[in-house]
Amino acid sequence: MKKVTFFFLLFSITLLQAKKIEVCKSCEISTIKKALELAENGDEIFIKKGVYKENDIEVNKAVTISGEEGSIIDGSFKSGVLHITSDNFVLKNIKIINVGVSYTKDFAAVKVVKCKNFTIQNIVLDQIFFGILIEKSHYGKIIGNKLSSTAKDEANSGNGIHIWHSSNMIVDSNEVFGMRDGIYFEFVTESKVHNNNSHNNVRYGLHFMFSNNDTYYKNIFKNNGAGVAVMFSKFITMYQNKFLDNWGSASYGLLLKEIYDTQIYDNLFQENTIGIKGEGCTRINYKNNTFLRNGWAIKIAGACYTNIFEKNDFMHNSLDLAYNTKVNDNKFENNHWSEYTGYDLDKDGVGDIPYRPVKLFSYVVNKTPEALVLLRSLFVDIINFSEKVSPVFTPDDLMDKKPIMNRINDRF
Image 1 (cartoon, rainbow, N blue to C red):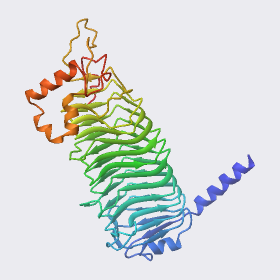
Image 2 (image 1 turned 90 degrees about the horizontal axis):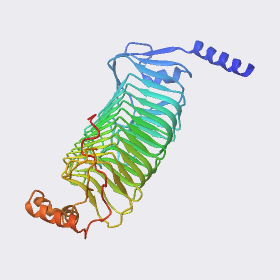
Image 3 (image 1 turned 180 degrees about the vertical axis):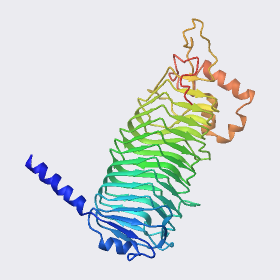
């Protein structure tokens, strides 16, 4: 009890001693670097309205850096801007522009290295190389920020929110566009990404690899070059996300590669070249998702085992399912298929005959993509019917034995 009282007293004394340092063009302290030289742990540096042309600002104290409306740090395209190496810092309510571009160094508007317990909130980053770059850090919050640039190709651009080798991160309510990848995770664990809008990025709206036990929910990933990629990870939960308008010859709403023990539910996949593409994915539960007007709803490559597709809506997709192997131990049950032409004589809402979602034409297109021009022809109807009667090329046990007659998920 005495120890707790001592630490509370010490914390109170620190707060009482904390001071506010104002920075402005006409103030005694006119640069952010000078303010940081004078600051102590617990102080606040308040940046008044104006443009401050500064680079490589080292933040190695537990301070709060904030600004009034109209406060801008201009990196003048020279290098990085803020380099933070202190625990317990807060960065909020400022704008950073014109970060330098380098092909050998990761210039960032905000670079955080080996920090704990920090917050980056309500900042605007524009014309940047990397936006918020975090390395080997833990218990951070990145909330309500807007990051943008004018990336044209992958080689000449960086990522918006880039987190590497970190844990317990919260990425919440950010908007990211015009970057290479909107949000990038690598070796990031026990973290949450939610309520973000990642759109119009050159490559991925979200890209994460080797990152376990993470949760992604209520995000919008729209009109990104290749959609969203999830690779070499396990124990992932993704729900209530929207994957929209990711079109292109190599685009998908969601790419899953070497993913294990994952829950994917209550998501919308709408108007993507491929809704979900899976390669080497095992023990994934797909439930209550909506696949609407995609090229392919789902495209499954090899080594995808023990996956369950249940109570999903497959509506008006050009092709519902592509499957490139005759081996199948995945389960499809109680899904709604807009292409289902069966009947329900007992009126229990479940089709009386099974539905085979893999069409022979889907197999043909996988082998010869040019055949897609025949999609709506009578020839396609004939070969699909013949394959349904006597399966030769498609898995004969891949069927939904209890297809649902009406749409299941009507929240979209």
